[in-house]
Amino acid sequence: MSLDRPVAPNPYDLLPAVPSFTVTSTDVTDGQPLQDAQVAAKGNNTSPQLSWSDVPEGTKSFVVTCFDPDAPTPSGYWHWVLVDLPADVTSLDTGAASEALPGNAFHVRNDGGAATFGGAAPPEGDHVHRYYFVVHAVGEETLGVSPDVSPAVVSFNLAFKTLGRAIIHGTYQR
Image (tube, rainbow, N blue to C red; front, side, top):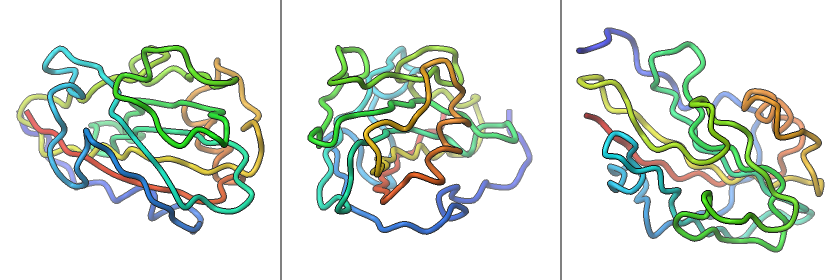
């Protein structure tokens, strides 16, 4: 199956400009295919290891997201939305989405309906999908949302409260 449609733009290019900072991963290589552990289509939903540094001054919390703009929907697909990580947390271990979260951090349901990380699972035969893992530095201790909001509400609030953004992306096609 091939869905004839244009490739979506990088969604973060369409947001208000903010300073960038550094994010690295032992599990995701920027611009390269995801490891099997991050691929639901292979039976896995393991969140990747992420570390970040050089965050903007005034950062009081973080939000971590994974978004696929290439899903065959007008709104893409949210795979992971982790909100209100304390400012002293600068890394997440592999599989952290399935473990106890630090401080008052919580998950918002992804587009699959689960309050955790959902791995890549694009339609068979579709073009390459991009999975943007983004650490958002927030200038407040809490984003001011509850766990029952949608990922779009989190994203809307981030548009006004983000001090900086660090991005790494993997790809997957089946």
